[in-house]
Image (cartoon, rainbow, N blue to C red; front, top):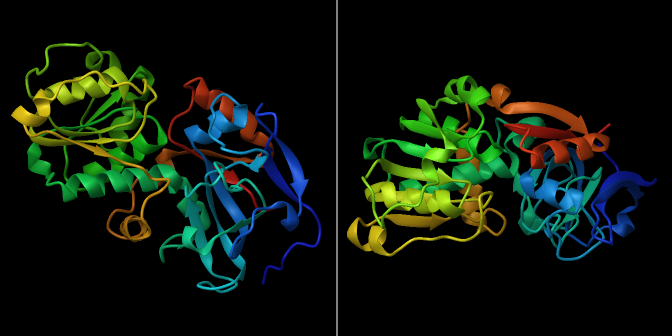
Length: 332
């Protein structure tokens, strides 16, 4: 069984000056307090990780701090709720924001952060999904709770080549939805259709400001972009359709009117994975481990890197040169 480390261990730590991060070595005494110590096996790369790791986004609320908003591994020591040897995962919950994150060989967190690994998963599978897969599952969960069904009409997924977008396409198509992927990458069309998209449209088709309401086209959407694109989705969603708002890659401002809400009954549903209530978090992971387990994880997984390869992945992600999910190998 894995023991607590007696020697310093590797970690990718965000620098105190806010100018990105660097590989270093830490001891357990350097980590935040917590009830559960985990021997990390895998993490992943999310857009927030790239912003924090390059210093181009103010993600961390305090510095220095270990980066990485995801981690999966094995419990080494626990003050309650878990036993040594338990396979577990943590996503969000303030990792790499106000608590040391998952880019370290050992991670120490409060027990409330920790979710048992689904029975059908290993740590590698869990981190192929990570926050992106969890967020996509939360979005589908909220949409269906709000009454969305496959007969509502085509469902748009914006930012389709990203982690959330690609997994959302897989989840929606498996549940019988007609999925329309929105992307600015023409060379990704075949890949998006492989994941389950019935058609792919260019992102420019959803960025033109029109009248307060336009022809109703979409039954609903999972939007990773925000800004003008979200405004256009609101104007063109069918009566009683629902939009799950997840990201702001296209801007944080929203130019719209109340008309889609009061004349068509359109719902705009906010999705926040970082501070999701535990019961909802557990339900989403349970579904991902059973009937919602994505069918195309091998295609969604872009590759695996070690901690020393993070810098390159961060740069390519921020330049729009990545797609799908990159898994981070932590354990030797």
